[in-house]
Every structure is written in structure tokens, then in C-alpha cells.
Image (cartoon, rainbow, N blue to C red; front, side, top):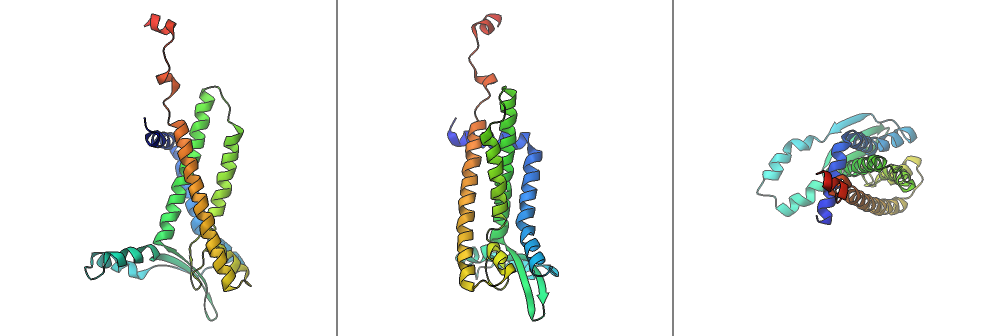
Length: 232
């Protein structure tokens, strides 16, 4: 069995066995990614007043089917296409706005799936260790704590904010005001780098846990004892 096959076998087994954990964690992470920025801005600046899907989306099929637009232009345009947004009105225009683009949505879904699989693998491995007479190891508890911290950190990762093009981390700075545009730009870059690092680390963690639990169960692979062979 190749290492890649073993990884996917382990992930599949864990998700099937602990589907409730996978779904619950994935939904929770997705909700945090979507609603934490709204909570921060609503509490520190002003509650949001309106929500709207992008009216242009009805023209998306026509845009994709058009032969007048090059494929390169389509691929460049789609990741930054805003799907929906929340806004809070101010006396001279929008007080703030939070939009979710195609790239944001893909990232939210990827985060949700990764952390759902991570926790499903942890629970599945814990069950297998318990069946084998071994208790949960301290490293596993540390892994749970690390995943929780990473999840909360990722909810302050990049996404789109009306008027400044800054991600959610600068939104927190924007919420408390007083930061220059240069500082917001630095925070935006730091946020992107940090999010990329955490995503890579989580992916590697999921792959490692999948490899651990993907090995065949000893019950079906162990060599029969002499007594067992005699009885057969």
C-alpha cells in the first residue's frame, strides 16, 4: 500500500466512523470564518444594517459562456468576484463593509474540511487506542488545543473589506481606528502569510494522522499463532 493511499484510507475511515464530529466541527469553523468579522465590527464600530447578494451574479453564466472574453481574463476575474456582503451605514456613506469573494468562500470551505477531518481523525485514533488497551496520549490533547487555537487564528485571516481592501486582521485594527494605511497593509501581508503557514501545518497534521490510522487493523494482519493454526 502506498503512503498516499494509506493517508486517504485513514481519512476516509475516520470521517465515515466519526461523521458527526466531522460535520459539527466543519460547520462551527465555517460559521466562525463568516460571522466573527461581523461580530468584531458590529461591537467595536456599528451593527450591520444590510445584507445583499451581488446582483451581477445573474450575469455570471453569460460571462462564462462568452467567447468575447478570454479564458485568462475569466480566471483572473472569478477569484475576486464578490458573492455577497454586509454593510453598516454611516452619516457620509458606508461605515464599514464586509464582502465574501469566491476565493474567500473556497478558503472557508477548505478550512472547514481540514479541521473537520483533523478532529474526526483524533477521535477515531483515540477510539482505536482505547480498543487496544491504550489511553489517550498527551500529544493528542496538545493537538486538540493547537487545532482550537489555529481555528480561532484562521477566523482572523484574509477576506475583503469595503473601502480598504484589507483582510479581517486589519479590520480588527480598523475597528479600533487610529492605524495608518501603511500599517493596515503590513497587517494584511502578515495575515496572509500566517494563514498560509497554519493551513499548510494543518494539512500536514491531517496527512500524518491519516497515515497513522490508515494502517490495516492488527486483527486482520497479524500472523496466526500456532494454537490458532492447530484449531483451524
